[in-house]
Image (cartoon, rainbow, N blue to C red; front, side, top):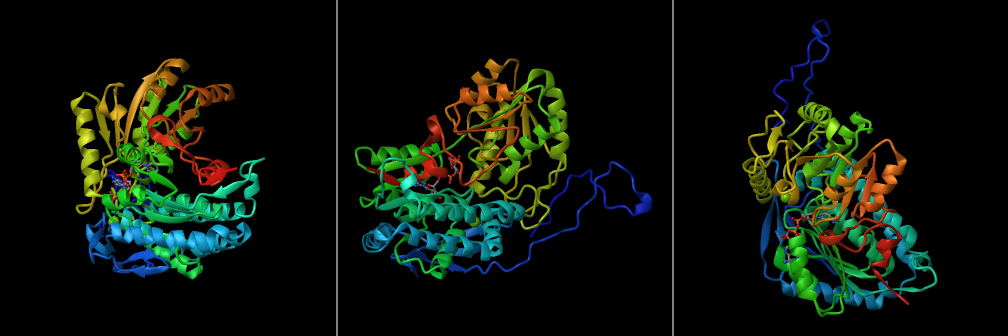
Length: 499
Ligand code: NAP
Ligand code: MG
């Protein structure tokens, strides 16, 4: 495993006599070493059992930080997806759909607790398979996944309050497809509300990050969830298309790119399937001249470098009020210099590996286009490990709205900085995008926050903070960022029929 790289200018830790104030010290390596108990061969999870794929095909899942193989992952064909749907239908008709909500809630509480019991294993597996820093999988992904099950467990016996004055009924079998940026957490966002409402599920994880989803099957077995309530089918895009297009799906829920979302929408047009889409984003993080700058810089850094920028709601466009642009850029560069990029298993690492070679190529291509189109690129002076897929934290200044880096989702640790003079110009620029998932506002004035949050066309607007999540809070987009909500009461409505 390559050691976490450090900015070249950092010095070795001096003895106390040599201490020079202002120097940055090297950290000793702090690798996470616990055993994640990974299987080397991961089979499909259908009808409560791990089963071999019908065509006998497997594909590799690699560790993007080392490029070494972690496991063989089963490739589900249409036959396997069909088997999964039949199992889900049977479980819906015979057990889950007719079980009282309070009883379903007990299973969800059990799943949440078991996830907590196995939290360390899941965090390590997530980091090895996906490349994100261990401190994020340990402190964010896994606890949030458990929190979603706890929250929805609490709803299961209170469903009469989901849609006051109307009664709610489950839909039946739900097909779900999720991306690679928060593999376990996206699985929890999808499964918990569907199950609480009484639906059964067929879910497909992303090709590069199937390990924690399939490992989750072990939690379901330990929780003694009735067979068929959740079926997990790993595979490639064709498997996803089979899950989304299956005639037995009463509802489909997709999280991923806008491009694939549109393909799916076309394929289900004319059917009576209920659909929700959680797609891409190009959020504006807007900093006014009265904002607390040090806090704002922390928020900007968290907004775009968290999880290597593999975040749909990443604050990938920074809009700064013109008078403070230089001050913000100076502070930002200073902060970026001390970000630790490298071994995701090191507990001090801030930015881990890019999820795949393909994604690294996409980021590189977009950054090259930014340079070609005339934006000014600043990159952290850190050294990157020689193996694995890594990208330096990068900031583009002198960006104009026509540049690709200002318009396209990069999904990497790359920030594009634009400027504005007035509130109206900030709103106009922030909304001038095909997306509308999230935004951030940094200002001292409450009234300005209220105005901005009303006028910004974004599903979530954070004020004086960024990237904060809670299961009680609905999340979802406007425009090409999709439709439907996940989390909160609104998220449950998307998994029921109201009568
Ligand atoms: P993606 O390429 O669209 O893939 C998402 C999922 O769809 C994967 O499981 C993928 O399988 C599958 N898939 C591919 N082609 C398919 C098809 N024709 N039919 C059905 N499924 C298909 O997206 P990604 O690169 O994994 O994820 C990044 C994107 O997700 C970004 O755009 C990001 O903004 C978005 N995202 C949105 C949210 C949100 O809440 N709005 C949250 C997280 C991520 P394979 O992996 O096998 O290709
Ligand atoms: Mg992997």
